Amino acid sequence: MAHSITRKDFLVKAGSALAVSSFGFPSIILPRKNEKLGVALVGLGNYSTNLLAPGLLQTKHCELRGIVTGSPEKIPVWQERYGIKDSNVYNYGNMYQLANNDDIDVVYIVLPNHMHAEYSIIGAEAGKHVWCEKPMAMNAEECREMIRVTKSNRVQLTIGYRMQHEPNTQTIIKYGQEQTYGEITEIRSGGAFNGNFGEGVWRTVANMGGGAMYDMGVYPLNAARYSSGLEPVAVRATQWTDRTDMFPDVDEHTDFDLEFPGGLIALCKTSFGKSMNYLEVDCTDGWYRLEPFLSYDGVQGETSSGTQLPEDPNHQQARQMDNDALAIKNNTPPIVPGEEGLADMVVVDAIFESAANGGDWIQL
Ligand code: NAD
Image 1 (cartoon, rainbow, N blue to C red):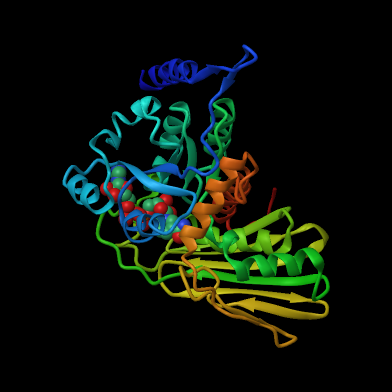
Image 2: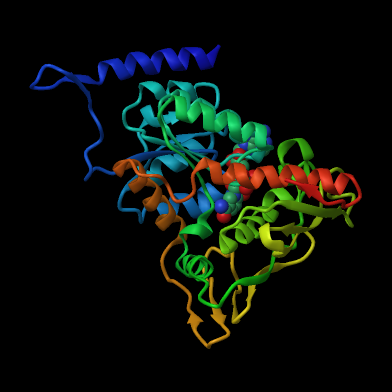
């Protein structure tokens, strides 16, 4: 099986990387701190093409060195545009051979959601650090397996929740931690866009991780958690579909309410049928809001005391990948570890359960 070959190859490789120190003890050769980490993008769709690869041209601590793709026609285009060596080009079937490639330190999984767990695990078993897009996987069980395998291979696992790297978002996280406007009394967040998808596109197919909740609902969910700094204790949800031809078996819309310890409620919405992009936090002594709160640029906000939170001009994905590369180089915890993706997916599992049971509260 590919996985066991990978693991064996990696162990052989790891063994050959042992050097004998001047004291006669073996020590593992780590990348030098001033060297950029080599990133391989796994899946060359819209997000890799238009956001991550351009972002990797701006990063200081990592760079694009490899690609994993099932589309041979993309290979020459990407090689020419980003100077990628023949030896750093892989497909989904031979990706495990990354175990023998020292150019690549990190695999970034940017595939349809149902493929996140499988390819994160292949990357980890090849001895590579794993960055994985949101939603982390299809359910909490897959997330736990990803965490287990990355830990046992001693590689970092980081989820692509880019908002947690964004300066205005970090400011409102701090307001919550320091109770700048008092205790939080209510959170409202909507993350949604009006989408038109062709037949069979993975975002419309249930067993590929389609539907609004997986794609956009994790933004308000994650926002409710990061702005309160709390873990929800219960959730209830309603899911429905207007355009049943386009979304035959996934949610076009999901509304969900989260209850946090102490009774705080977050009212959250997501949709593929209309646009929403707000995060509003009410507190005992005032309020603050971000709108838009999840866009690639232009995230901005205001507070009840008149503080403006102006747009940050920097490339979001470049900042995220530099932060994540530094965590690897310095061997410090990443801003968004796998456990953060798991915490969301525990709630997503309960959202589907609640919606299937008529919107009853589910205890978490
Ligand atoms: P996309 O459809 O544009 O790209 C998916 C890629 O996967 C394509 O290159 C496709 O060829 C490849 N692929 C391999 N096997 C496939 C299969 N069986 N079916 C369909 N495609 C297959 O999608 P995208 O918008 O690039 O999204 C990819 C991932 O990135 C998703 O998990 C999505 O949630 C995430 N994403 C995150 C953000 C963000 O802001 N963090 C933004 C967009 C997408």
